[in-house]
Structure formats: C-alpha cells, structure tokens
Image (cartoon, rainbow, N blue to C red; front, side, top):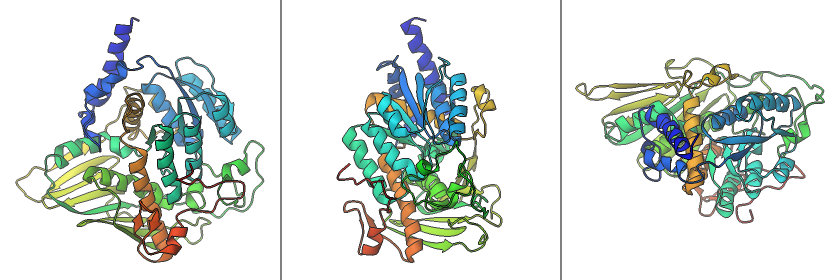
Length: 469
C-alpha cells in the first residue's frame, strides 16, 4: 500500500471512530476544543511509527485495555509482566493471536527487569491499586508514556508525586477514567449541557448499589508455586495468604485499594467535575462503615456517604453493597440537578428530564461496537458498553503523545478525582470534615490528617515524594 493510501486509511479509522458515534472530539476536552481535524494530525506526525508496548498486570482490565490499543493503533506488544505465571502465559498467547505480527511478547515476572531490558514507548498498567504509583513513576523514568488504570494512587502524596513525575520526565499519562469518553455521555454533554438546557446546576447526586463487596471469610492457604505473593504485596502490608487475590478479592481490603468509594465514586465524581468544570472541592466529609456485612473478612465499608463541597454546589455520594437500589434502572449513576431540569446518567444510558413540561425530554442510549470489532465477541469478561470509550481514550492517548498536548483524562485532573475520594475515606475514619490545600500538600488546620496523606510502606519500599521524584 502506498504512503498516501495508508494516510487515507488512518484518516478513515480516526474519523469513523469519533464521527460515527455522533460527536466530535471537541466534546472531550476540559482544557479547550479538540476538533477531529486536530486528531487527523496523527497522520502527519510520525504517521508510520510503530509503538513498542509493554503491559504490567496481565489480569482482567490490563488485558482489556491492551486489546483496545491493539485495535486502534500501530503497536507491537513486545513485553508482558505479571507475578502470576498462569496469567502471564495466558496473556502472551492472547496477544500473539491479536497483534498483526503474531509475535509472542517476552514474559517477565519482575516489572523493573522488564523496564530495564526493553526500550518501551508505552506502558499500560493494570495491576491492583497499591502498585499504581510506584510502577507508573518507574515507567516514566524508563522513558515510557503510561496508560494508568484508575485510581492513580492509594494515598494523596502518591498522587502528588505522579503529577510531579509527569512534569519532570515530560511524559504523557492517560488515566482509565473512561466516562470522559463514553459516547452517550458525550452526546448528552453536547445536546444538554452545552445548550444550557439544565440551567444553573446546584446539586449533584452520585451513587452505587452494586453487591460488589467481597463477602467471604476464607482461612489460610498454601501459596501456589506459580504465584509470587511477596511481589504481589509489594509496598502494602503483608496479609495472611488466603487464596488468589486477583480480580475482586483484593478490592475488599483497604491495604490494597480505596474501597468502593475509591473504585466507583471516582468514576462518577470525575465525570461530574469534567462536565461542570469543577476543580478541587473546598471541603470533604464522609460517614459510614461496616453496618451489615460483618461476617466478611473484607475491611472496606459496606455503607458510606460522602459530600464534596464546591461553590454553591454539593456533590453527594452514597453506596451500599447490600439491599436494593432505589432506582433499579440506574444502579450506578450520577444526576445533575439544575434550575431548568436534571440529567441522569450511567454507563448504560442517560436522560434529560426538563422542569418545563413544554420542553422535550431526551434519552441517550449506550453505543456498542460488537460488529465493527468482532474480537470483542470472544474477549473474556469484556465490558461491551465500555469498549468504545476505551478505544477513543487510546486514540486520544496517542494523539497527546504525538502533539505534546495533555490527554483528556490527564494525570492532574485524575489526581484531583482520586485524592478527593481518598480524603473522603480519611474523613470517615477521623470523623470530621477535611479541607485539603494542594499548594502546601496539607490538610488545613489538621496535623493528624496531614500525616495520613501518605501511607506507611512495607520495609524495603520507599514512598515517592513529589519534591524528590
């Protein structure tokens, strides 16, 4: 194929991905308009560059993110890393089936060895949350751009260090907060918010009523020979091994995660902040605990509310991992309440409900691309509703790398969303509201809370600091 025809093919791919969904990339940006013409510069700058890619964390979402990148970009996956040999072998086989070269990536059990021995352009990080900050910083230092799954950190200072590292090493971090790319939410943004149909928004509700908390109490088990539990635990406290912690089990423990609030609220609050152009909350408060599911070994809250206060606007979160949802049609969602109407949205749909009976309500349905990307049909545990958003994220990621602009889900905005959820957990723990000052990296008038902004690492691991990164 000639160079001109290759350019035309890539233009059709990019235009089709965005235009075919009924919006332009100008709907995405929080920093300024990004037109589809701007995205076409992918064809003019390093148009034929082959991106060398590595993946750290070959489980569910790590693989899924990698597969979406393979679908939309010119990449060669050269390295995979996981502390579970079975995960590693399975991922290597799947990648070799999916990438054009059919090559089997080199396999590593130690991510630092992988970074030191491969000259990677891009690293995808899909490990449990407690590893995100260290692995991302090490990848940046190794010269790679990073696609980092949310939340970016398990404490506030880790997040500050990531922001500092991205600036120092001049690399792009795109964060897996894909609601900013969800087609039906983008359409609702364009047709409702940008046309002023909501009026002035002065209250936001956000919630999750999924029964997603790990509610078991297993006893100790022998560590299998194919799994490096010491390396998996990393900087987190060493807990008794009670079975493979993959997928949902580790999410039930604050040693490794930010709880349900940090897992699910971070998506909705980030989307709300983006839609309404909100910065840091002035104050964060939270109440909750383990009220019902006391039989479980998990130590994350099964019931929690939180309030993120902005000027003349409160964003209120609620989750329960038990009972029923008050609105079964929207079990995980947010609602913007304005002077002219409300917009409610989930990962599956959105609808505008006007106050004025003469104004027409609107409904926005989820977009699927199963026919366009048939490999989606054979991907294990794929979230079909999220796949189009992740593909758009990957295109935006590549475009940001090539043009030097910030990606839409950039590290600074993602840090605000992540840290706000962490502050809510701290507020619940301490029993009082917290006011964080990002300039001094302290909780205002609260020395005890300020100390808790950085977790204590296990011996042998050094907590990153933004001033010495």
